[in-house]
Length: 288
Image (cartoon, rainbow, N blue to C red; front, side, top):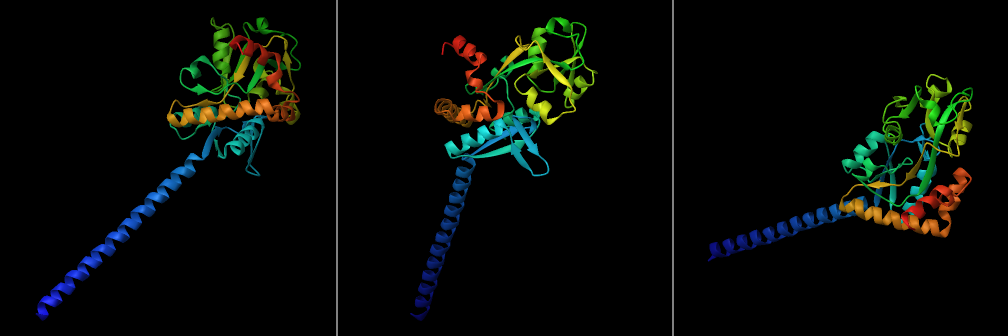
C-alpha cells in the first residue's frame, strides 16, 4: 500500500513538472513571438532613404557633425513627421543607392532623382516634386560656347550614375561630343578648362558657387535648357514599395495644397518650383 502511494505521488510530481515546463515553454515562445512582432512593427515604421549626402543643396552630410541637411533631407523629415515614420538616411553614392533599393535594403533614393525611361521600366515613381532645367555650364572665361550647337567636337563631363548620361546620349546619338564620366570633381575640371562643359541645374548653380567661391563657372543659354529633369522618388515594385509610394504620394499632395512645400522650396531656392513654367507645362501635357 505504501509503495503504491509513493508511486502515485511520483506520478503526480512528474505531471506537475511537465505542466510547469509546458507553461514555461509556452511563455518563452509567446514572448519571442511578441518580441518578433514588435521588432517587425518597429521596422515597418521606418522609411530607409538612400542618398549620397554630397549634392548641395538637396542632400548634404557633414562629416564633422555627422548631421544631414538639404532640401531632400528636410522634405523627407516632414514626410516622416506627417506619416508617423522614422526616416533613416543611408549614405551611398547613386549607383550603390539604387543597388540597395534593388536588394530591398533601402525603400527609396533621394538626390533630385530624375524620371527616365530606363528607370521607369524598373521602378514606380511618386508624382513629381521638383522640376529642374539643366543648362550647359562652362568656365567663366569661355566665350566660345553659347549653346548646345557649339559643342560639336568638344568635351562634356557627366556624373557617374547620373540621369545626364541618358539624356545627353539621346541628344548626341552620333557621338559628336566627347563624353567623360566623373565620380567627383566634375565642376572643378570645367572651371579649370580641362573639360569644355557639363550640364548642371540652373536653379542650384548659384548656391553651389556661393559655397565654393573657387569655382569660376557660368550657365549659358538659360532660356533654352539642354533638358529639363522631372524629379520624383523611386520605389521598388514590391508590396512594401507600393504601400510606401501611396503614403508618400498622399503626403506630397497635401504639402502642395497646404503651402508647406512652397515654404520649404522658397527657403532653399527662393521660389516655388511647382509654380514654374516647367511644372505648368508638365501638368498640361499630363492633362492635369
